[in-house]
Length: 212
Length: 158
Image 1: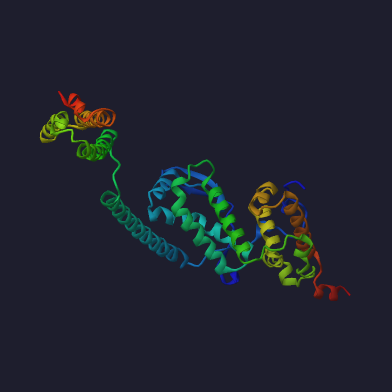
Image 2: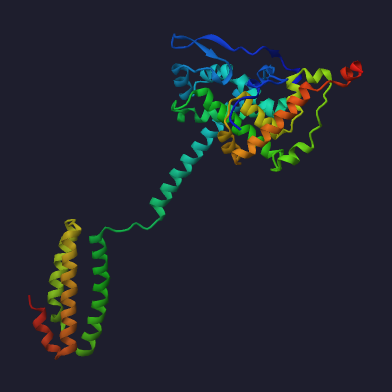
């Protein structure tokens, strides 16, 4: 599982010195920019340029996949798949959208495909999706831990929550991604967030005993 | 529902505070190795494809029948027709005894054809000669079939 990985605080904004000599403030994760020099080198198949891209976006790819799939090995497979695909397709990237957004879409697609492949995505019934999930009432440790609460969601609900709440996908974009209606992701999101909220706010059994 | 994010609403969990995990440090070297393997396979496939394509082109050049240009086709057809007409004429000549002089016109054309072939004449010169030869043969055959065999001599005069 992912818990044996290094954890570091999320950098919100930092100054990034680009290869073309310019410096600019950029956000973290997929929001970072890629300078034209590195992009052009990558288009020519320069592995050093790909290394720069990996250093900048690899962690964001990994975390998107890990948050949805919940398994370290599966997330690494996604990163490898996405980057190998990017190596071959970066020549076709014309900069119509930011590079990070392009890579994020590739990562989200690969992650959802992996969910489908492992048949974690089989059930279209939203009620059935949440039936297997334990009701709220997590212990004190997991209640305080957003990661643990997220991992308590079914994979498909986790995908909706992560893509919408963390990665900024709209319901329209998710409808395209999942091949479902917007109502579908809205319904899953509402149910999932209620479960998360209930779990986060519910008193633990220990606290409940103490209160008595 | 609009697209308001969960952490904007009052709640007990802020998903922006999810921990950020770093991938295994061995992942990048694994990816580089995979990419190098893929590049090698692609090169090998490209090389194999090029060889196969070159072999296919060679085979096509050697084995496939080549379509003739229109004039060449006309000459070939003229030669075939000439053979047929000549056989037909010989059969008639044997039965009606029109005499050797009946082929004089054809022989003149044959000489012209031979001379043309000898100097490497082009198709646009050869095709009309074959047409003339066949026309002469058809005329001979028609005469023999319609009239007395000795009238065929008139057609053979140049």
